[in-house]
Length: 523
Image 1 (tube, rainbow, N blue to C red):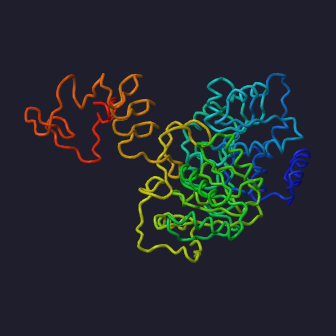
Image 2 (image 1 turned 30 degrees about the horizontal axis):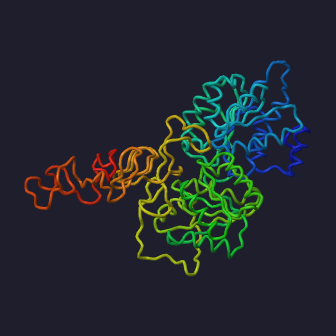
Image 3 (image 1 turned 180 degrees about the vertical axis):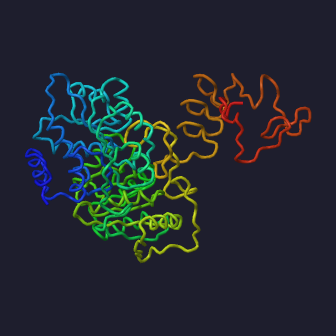
């Protein structure tokens, strides 16, 4: 079957041919006729199977067949929602490429960048709007976008949007749309939550399920290496060097872990960069561009930041740490083996992650083949430590739960967001650390940014007296002209590191007043 047989017009076929596509993929063959017929659709296909073209091509066909005749500003007629910036940018690029010979305008909007240029472009009118939920609501609340004439709604990677807690934002967007519209729901997996959303959103939809539920592409070779947590980085560097790998996508659980691993790989002489939600959009774009262009060999990413990354013929994906959510394993390794290409997915598994591996294999309904690297056999005496909400209790991987901030993808924190088990997290605060991002002050250190005064230093800007200045005799731990008490003075017993009759505190006991304004040297 060719694209010609799907009922697409000549301008779209010309653009598709220029992209090098000759035959539609299975999801495209099934989805395009349904969308062209104006029916609602619920489609499940693994990432890399061409599902983006499966909805963009028929949408462009439908919009171009009904050109607007009014001279007023073009309303948004097709709205495509995605969970992350990267996926939004990728979908927007596809829409632009496929519509190059059509009289249609498209725009991509997401957080992490200035909203003003996006508002200016919307004023000129847009036919197809690709957006992340948070930024779209920001624009709507400022009356910068009118969604009252949307004819087609697409939820792309709906499973990830639910994982990120965007369900409430999605409902707020739906409330701004006309009741009569065509709805298309695309997801890499068909979870029960997705089916529940589909029941409320879709009207008698056609269903397309190209691959079995929650399965990995058969074109991906999967392997597991058992290795101690502390030796993972060493093994990864060895594998990259021995195999002369030039392009490797590596997954960690946390932002902190991604930064640390990228730094260590660079020290090993392997060019690497990290990409995650705390990076600016410019830094993320540069890292991805360098990775695609071969300037760096390794891109270390967190789960959410990697969604939407479209890298042609990516040969290697490494799970440096297994995800807490088994479905995320399918999403991760789906970055390789895209379309007709083959790929390799390797997981470095320590003793703490054996349960996570069993959960993944239960989802896949198969055992992932094991491989051993001589010299890296696990130490059987090491006991497993529980992984709590994506982090280790101690050591490895680093990073704790993120305490707010924007959801990954650059959008604001979705209302009512539930903590995804695979979400990125910041390092855990040490016991006794102050709230917020302030570092822990040493005992007696002053509030604010003032440096700690040396012992015996005078208040204000007065210079420190030199030893032996007779005009101002040095006071020794006393006030006024009171003589220094000698040891054993029963009239004034000496207090030992305590208040009143309180017993001396042991090391580690920090009362609230330990962080007073008095420097430790001024008594």
